Amino acid sequence: MSTPLRSPNRWCALVVLSLTQLVVVLDGTIVNIALPQAQIELGLSDSERQWVVTAYALAFGALLLLGGRIADYWGRKRTYLVGMVGFGAASVFGGMAQNGTELIAARGLQGLFAAMLAPAALALLTMTFTHGKDRNTAFAVFGTIAGAGAAIGLLLGGALTEFADWRWCLLVNVFFVILGLIGGILFLTESKADGDNRYDVWGAITVILGLGSLVYGFSLAEGGWGSADTIGFLAIGVVLLGLFVWIESRVAQPLLPLSIVANKVRGGAFLIQAVTGSVMIGATLYLTFHLQIVLGMAPFASGLASLPLTVAIMIVAPIATKLLPLSGPRPMMIGGPLLVAVGLVYLSRITADGDYFVQVLPALVLMGFGMGFVFVPLQNLALSGVAPHDAGAASATANSAMQIGGSIGLSIFTAIYAATAGATSGLTGTALLEAFTSGYSATFLAAAVGMVLASVIAAVFIRGEKSELLPQGDAVAMAHVG
Image (cartoon, rainbow, N blue to C red; front, side, top):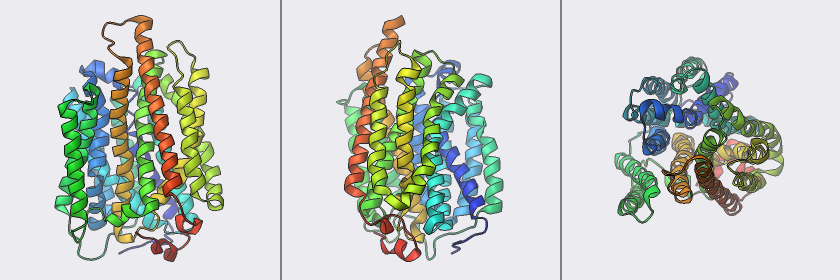
């Protein structure tokens, strides 16, 4: 196995891998601003509109564990390059879609290839930056870009939708893919797991079907939590995921070694990623609707209006990076989510006739500051002490937690929005806008509750000496596996 501890191209590799992470994350939100125009042009129903977002996150999250193992066994660089090509092809297909079915299918294919691309990229980062200050810096950069990607997607999506066409929100990926392929060929070093590697087929089947059933069940909750379909799919999902855990505890080469999630710190980090994913994917979608539908902003203007979230994250990131070795990650992981929660509570005070600079801007700044303190240490914690053999699986779990969290969060927020806004078909004018605003406000409050829960999770799970939580050497890193 190739393990480039001090590769001379490691900083160029960081640029390439960070660009990859940016593409994967921003594609979760870049179509959000384009959805109103795409819905009109393609004649999408409201349910289809939601599935344009959900199909990507669901395919991405459900297939990530398999993608991580493919990266480990087949080769991380090779998997990365194939994922790039496939992602670009799926983006072209989506950009040329002629109806809702084709667009949703293209988004699912994007998620499929992203499920190969993302764990390969994060595993390559883990193998390139193994310890010390360089590792902390690399993961801080990578995590910050992951956190800012959702907001960057809103800005880029707004610009492309208003000044070009909504289809360019998908076609623009071709440019990123070309850069990623060139950079990957030049600067990335191949690595893969040693030994006789066999794929855990039954584990892959049960986790894919289990996560799919779970997310689909949550998506049906918009029509009522007590419906037979909702309960049935949620129950099937839980049973299949339970079966997956049973299989993983018994196979020789599991898709997800349970030691990865059994570690208290890593397990806590995965849970926090799930919650933050729900906020960054779900809550930002409803923020977009409020800016465009209620406040009447054009697509690019609404993208600009979301930009303070990204700017705040970027301001905090270098500060948090310098503080991390001094304070350790625990204070940031407890305080950061609480700051985000305060911003979301403030955002929930929106009114139909409110002013952006009074009701929205301060909330975005607070959320960005809080997210900056969360994202800088989060990826490092999620992969701390993972054996090289399982780097792809651990990376996939980290990404999967965020994407599945986003899928489930979006479904829950949609159900809360529908229950709060009520029937809007007969409403017009101010009454309609007030109903929309009431629903959006409820989703922001729900997201705030989620971030408080993330802070509690951090307080309970993120414990240990700084040397344990932030590996400073190979011996330390490997001493705390499991």
